Length: 164
Figure 1 (cartoon, rainbow, N blue to C red):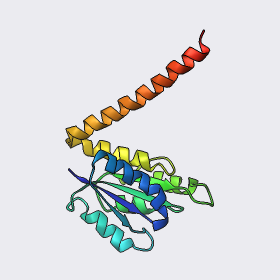
Figure 2 (figure 1 turned 90 degrees about the horizontal axis):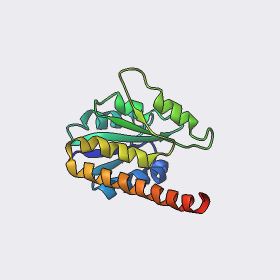
Figure 3 (figure 1 turned 90 degrees about the vertical axis):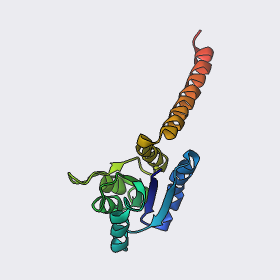
């Protein structure tokens, strides 16, 4: 199975990134976690991206706040799918990171999830990896069914209470 690379621009992004880590663990998807900054360690982040496919990665998740150039810098150096997590900051509530992550030039795509949306970033990475892994497809389908059943149970309670 291909690995998921998780790269955060700063160790302060770890509380957000842990949601992705926990989701990948839950599904049994191998991963590695690194701290590389697009601005402070540009050589290391570029080298990671350039070698990612040869090092067994299938998807890279990048989390960064403020200017949030990390996902774009990684995507510029690999053809692997890159998923950006804009991380909320104090100044602009993460809107700066969201816009920096989502507004990529044609030819260098970055799939972007919600601000602090690490859980969905992991699930998207799992869906990509699952293209060649039937067991992951089964786990994803079971999780979707469980979520649907939870909503239907709540619906039944609400209907019973309010629909006479």
